[in-house]
Image (cartoon, rainbow, N blue to C red; front, side):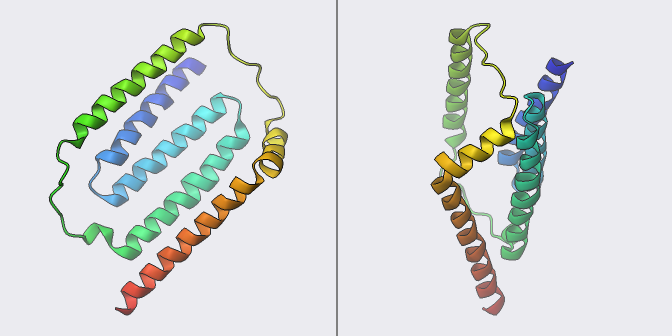
Length: 164
């Protein structure tokens, strides 16, 4: 049953990931991103990482997608003019890089072989908290500052647009 759920969630995650980059509408792209984040949360649950799944839904699916939609609505990206794409054939390079990534993943799985999975950590919330507040405290705080700067920048851009 877990394998069936894994393949369903993985297929929907890949399809919604393609939907994110294939959509011309930023709002539809954000909705596909929301579906992708929810599928990733389901995959985390299958990996017995319930805390990470809840954080995925609350932080990414909740806050980041809503913030993205808020900025899109404020800046009016949907009403922007269509410009001619100077890199028309970039999808060929993207496809080749995607195939190269897939080959690398399959090669790594073949090299890893069966029976090399590590023992699951039973107290993953405590281990994650200790790691964030000891070894990774500076990157954790820098991420918070970067998000704060991005929010302030979005508000400043929206204010300039409303005034001018």
